[in-house]
Image (tube, rainbow, N blue to C red; front, side):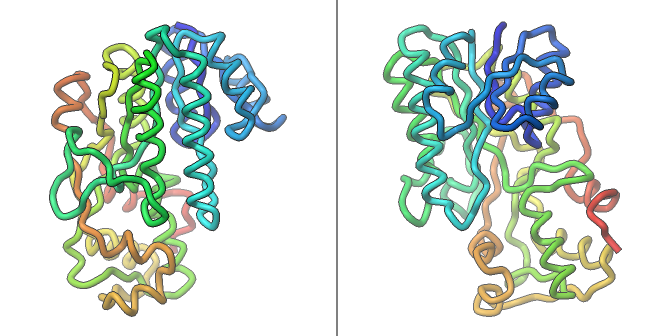
Length: 299
């Protein structure tokens, strides 16, 4: 297939591209800079200049392709709600180029948009988008374009997509622990985050191209839930700093915008995804990668 990938040079997108090229697909990568374009050429990818705010570049990239994988997102959390709305518009633009064609559009979502307290499943709808939960806009956009004859599906990623170099939100916990010289968790620390290795996550995207169905939700989740206390303990040991339990009030000051996520129990299941796509995660778990992290300057 001829596949248009946004976020093709990103942490997850680059792993997807490598797998697609290895499988013999022709990949077109969205590039917003000369550096990104150079990286794509080196990876054997055709360059398409543009970005997620240039809707015409998205429409033209999708129009020339047999399918689209959308992983790009503006990771500026000071403008989080605005960036989520940008993503909604980007998905609508991609969908408009694919309308009526039954060509696949794979959109990236998050397991953090599910109701907390139990293992969320692929059948669970996201919490409706709002100022407090803006990220659901991406799933809502995918559903809207499905109604227009687009074979859109959503792959939900957990808070920690990891390898031994980057670890999603856990990378931010490491930075905070290094800065403040304590590794903290909230309450008794039994609340959980799901996790997946970046290569296992990329495989879900490639399988969804082959086997995905319109309107489906898939969970790229290898570990249903890793307790936050366990994460904090490994970080504390690696940095040689105290591991500290904090109250919700203390956490608000310590973690800032991360405090909400630190106090939520948000496990997620991928049983249906594994069954429907034939996906079997095989890479190391989060704590294993954290124990052997190379480039995080752990002390």
